[in-house]
Amino acid sequence: MYKREKSIQIKSSASALYNNLSILPITDKNLTYFAVIHGSVVNMVSASTDGLNLSHRQLQSKEGGMVHGTSLIIQASWCVLPSRILLVLASQKGIQMYESDGSIMVYWHAVDTPEMPTGISTGSILVFNVPPKGTNITVSEVLEQHRDPITDIACDCSENKECVADLVTADDSGVLCIWKSGKDFKLMHKIAAYGGPCSSVKMWSGTIAAGYGSGQILIYDAATGTVHVEVNGHARWICALDMASESGKLLSGAEDSFLRIWRIYRNSESNTIEVEHEHTECITDIQICGAKFCDPEGNAFAVTGYDLSEIIRYVRV
Image 1: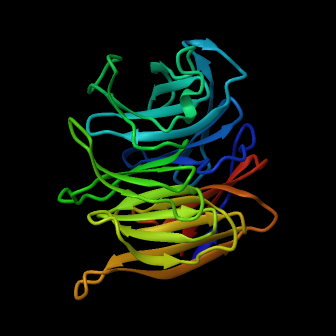
Image 2 (image 1 turned 180 degrees about the vertical axis):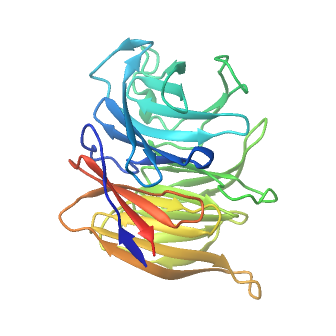
């Protein structure tokens, strides 16, 4: 059972983008970072655990270090690497990487160039080599398996290091590609489109959860690429998925105004992946566009809505 907590106010409302909420818990400081996109700006909030102490920062879309207000931001997300954490913004013009608190931009990469005027929608995936510190970030590889715009990318958020695959990418046609990362990325499986766009995808302990425009959630085995469970979880387009890294809980949000929490586990006897429904929350009169767990256990989650200047929070009781 979850109860609604005090909302966190943001400087400007959320744009109508899928997966329009990123969260980074800073456990040693009892802080949580939130990032929400509004047009060419990212609203960043640093909040104490009780939500009473807030610090705001707005990051502007830039082009090579110069302010370029017409460049819309498409995605903002924290990337937790072994040696550092970066806040990465993807816009129509390029990719910006910031220190985790948003204070310093450490790298800029242009994608909208005369040679490639539609660089953000080609389906190419750029792999960057990021040093433990500093700004010497370089493109190490370009993955060219998708032919449609990329909608989401997810790595395995569990501590299971034995997984044969640890990255999944999705595109606007519904194609999924499952990869093994490393010095050279290896394509493990390419899953054909499932009747419509895949708007959100997550990965946990060798399991992949993919949300579709049909409102369905498909659960795949990352090692084989096969479907184990088909969940008719929502009546309308799924706009956000998230996995709790320590518990295997799955959070789904859709345009039907419902948020649902599921538990994913592997049956030890049959070695099949199974899903149980745990909780449902209805947020009326709000078009959901982002939903994320606030902690690794999945004891709290937050949600954003289109044209809504607040982040709604729920805590387990």
